[in-house]
Image (cartoon, rainbow, N blue to C red; front, side, top):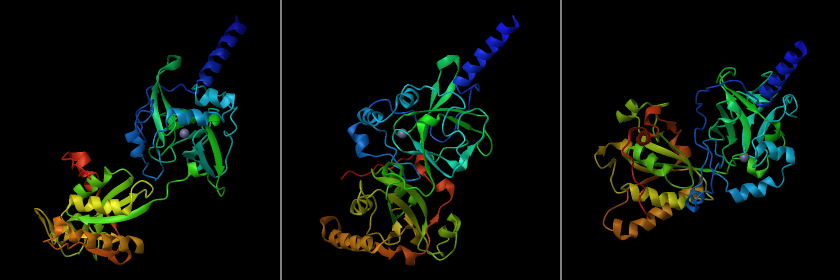
Length: 362
Ligand SMILES: [Zn+2]
């Protein structure tokens, strides 16, 4: 009987270990709550790529592309990544890897975890307390094996990675429990393949009245990776909204746009900017009056400066501006001084408070 009891205990232990889990009811973690894509993205989604704030293209891959990538997987890797299997504890090749570097998705190459967040959980599986960047790892409720767990997946290709639990160390209190089979480790100093690198972005700055609306509209434009409200072109260091509203710092309410030039060109940003603000109003936009609301383009390169000047010269001749002078300033961003991010309550203001601004049609 004693032998049977020990045997039963052993079986239970193996089952618990093999499911990589025992914690239940994990709170929602904030990295990415988007459900994973289950079907092919629409053509519109492909025209409107999705980026993580860290500048990686995280547009969901189509099933056709995933099938193509899956051809390189071994049977063991496919069992974990595609069939949501779990490798045996203490068996994965990355459990005891203590080198500095990045862990990318075995299937699509997206960076998922950094060695900085790896810790020894004692569970037998590689463990991390946070993902590489916001938006790179998705969660999905998993009710298999009679438990409720949060499955973790690659946000780009939906590869199964493991599960996340709320018994991890500080600062997040989370434990991302990984299968080594789902990851490829790239040591610091080694060249990252193209699919593991952030996209090459450019930065542009536009001031055109209240930054809430300018930011909101640019954020809707395909190819815009990030839009942030702030202050630029003034004299005071680290100005507050109150300082800027006092009209003696010289700052303009400005939006910093990080964009993917492969999807949207600087010229297209200029066109949109002129559609949704009035470049002929001096130191005001509608009811907002004062130099903080002036129309200005802070250029990040000589090429941008050239394009902005040519664009304004061209616009001045079209019917819309034939009888009105365009007063938009073009200022070298280096000479305009630092871009200061505005207070948090100004960021994504319309998304938080409603009053969404429509993006004008072409
Ligand atoms: Zn992936």
